[in-house]
Length: 242
Image (cartoon, rainbow, N blue to C red; front, top):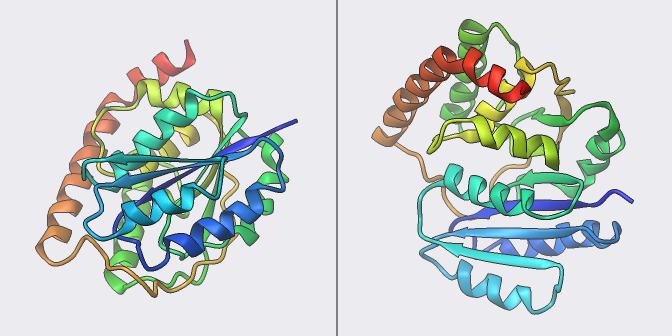
């Protein structure tokens, strides 16, 4: 029987974290043996306390507290934990209540068609600047790598655990947005990413962490990382195929 582990980073989500976990746990408990791990990325509000309280109600929930290093580092921490388990699949989503478990079966039902399946946010409900960033990522992926990925950084993805482990072993360390690079690498390795349309809700709690001048810095860092990744790509692909 296939099982999955849900990886969910969390930062300053005290107002919605219980609702989000309760909703996803309702889904997880339908799949015997499946579990969730939440990575608290050094939240400054009461998210850590909330998580510790929620954990008492769910034996299949693991909470990892870490110092604040950003969303990408939290995701990688969760992936590292996930690939050390025996679950067949790794599901990743965010804790901001912008995604719904209702779309899970769209990915789960086709899991045997690809090792790496991602959604894309149709009718995306995000601030304009975040939509622009996503479009730039799509443009640079086409420019640098010759591939079209509708939503390379989408936090709604289902990956075969063994395959994810192989990808993690070869991607560069300390990437700002590792999900983008995992998507690129899987696509260049011949995986059909499927690009499944998923619902995306407006954020009603918490706050966006990347604003003003930080946004420009993030964009510049992202472009630099993409260029370096392109220069290393053939070597990385050869290592992946060994």
